[in-house]
Amino acid sequence: MSELNVENEILISEKAAKQILKIMEENAVIEGSGLRVGVKGGGCSGLSYTMNFDSAPKESDTVVEYSGVRLFVDPKSLFYLMGTELDFSDGLNGKGFTFNNPNASKTCGCGQSFGV
Image 1 (cartoon, rainbow, N blue to C red):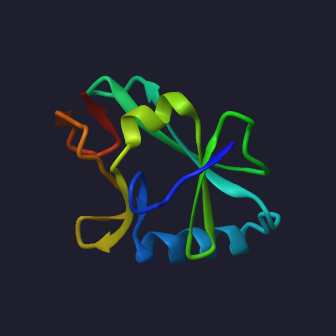
Image 2 (image 1 turned 45 degrees about the vertical axis):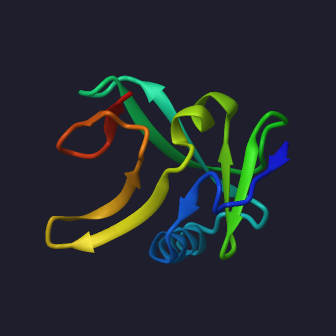
């Protein structure tokens, strides 16, 4: 398991970090757990983002920590997510997490899938 400097690899906005911590508290997610973010095949643009809570990182995961939030990222997903900012929007256009991914050459309207 490797530790990353969050500024160089994956960013978590302050708003996203607060929302993740709130969800973890509301769902009694155990201490030491983290948010697993990843990429899988599918979606309208070819790849889609995944997010779920996990009790511990896997041996090959990269762990990103920011403002009390731990992200677990597998090596394949990290390749597609380098430089990405995980943000949270609660504006008029909807509420939810967004991935601002500089590696995406195309995205779909919902923001949940992308192509490279």
